[in-house]
Length: 253
Image (cartoon, rainbow, N blue to C red; front, side):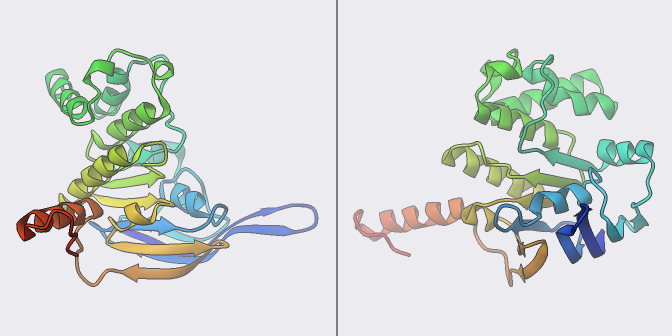
């Protein structure tokens, strides 16, 4: 599905060349859930933007769905964004002049979804994210966490084949973050390919594969041997075992 070969991203100044990514080779198969980790400045967001056709590499090859996408015209990129790729941005990128409802609905309009179907799909996500009471508010009337939820709802409502998430839980409290990660897990189980950038070790574990970037280079690429329960599922299981043990003050792991 995704093939990156010897990808470099660098910036030239008068006296030196500064690399953001260096000799990155990465294959992502359809249906994978990949977590990208690494310190700030390691190139995580740049890599995500290149995969999402928002940025171009300085050197290397990139194929998406078995087609080279390095020389795509803007119109072709728009088609990929409209029909195949969904984004969850750190900076939200909500449309200030639109309400919560309208922001979430917008991708469906571009995809030509009928009005009644749009209404049902938006209502479902508003309810799922506990945002029904906020549907007529504008972005500037929301907290940072609420804006993040709207951005996530907008990204997933059209069920893209590829979802790219840059710190999807960065502005959410723990409970909201766990809820969002469970949603992403469900979407992946339904076949959606997901690539997330995160600093959160716990939420990275939702991925079936974890790569670590340092100084623009992939230092680790770990594929889990078998599916593991999510952190939330492990917590639920431990609580059940505590109850069954008859010892409420003893945690069995």
